[in-house]
Length: 270
Image (cartoon, rainbow, N blue to C red; front, side):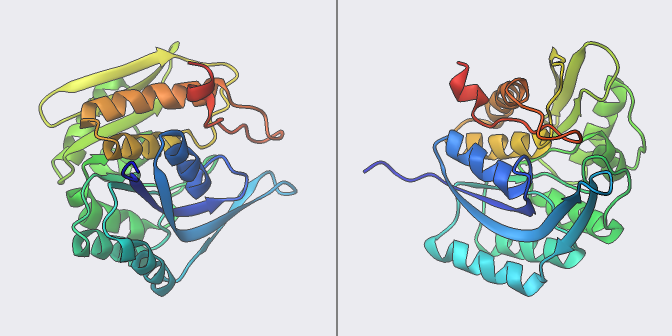
């Protein structure tokens, strides 16, 4: 029997299926890995209130119990974090990573729900910066998150993305991907990868319509799964870019508010 490759997500639940642990587990499966999940939060979206998000955190004790169950079979080949919900849960994640000698850690520093523009919990953002960045093989902030973690505020250019990536890497992460996606002007969806010495600009043509709900979670999960399967960090990031681009191109309109990526797009359209 071939060795089972194990991947873990510590993240929130998106019942619409596009993001969160649902996106992560689908991505892990597409990469041929066995996915584990520790649920941190439940997010609901109200179609009667302009798709307003409500976030319900789990208790830190419950998250810790889930992780104790997961690690009963030994460490994972790679893992990622997503929405953690509170500084206490960030601490639980940090302790589990350290206690189990977990390698190939991907930190997706989720601070805001799509369509919202305020940090969900400023204390958890600080805890991610202080406790998790030093453990990260890769950290994958979007423009908003990169602006918060770097202290640079709003990022509007590729040069600003590079500056933010360097500032975040200096806080302890081995490598950084600042996800610009479709947020910058122009015809390209641009991300910036920084390995501590060299910047790589990852650019693809923008896809219209852009069904991109869950793209960030999917990208980070793909990076983790790539590391788990033995790819070097740069190769894992490059494949993840291709994977999420295909997922966006294969996405669909769920309702008038959101269109999720389709996680099977990379496999089905090769």
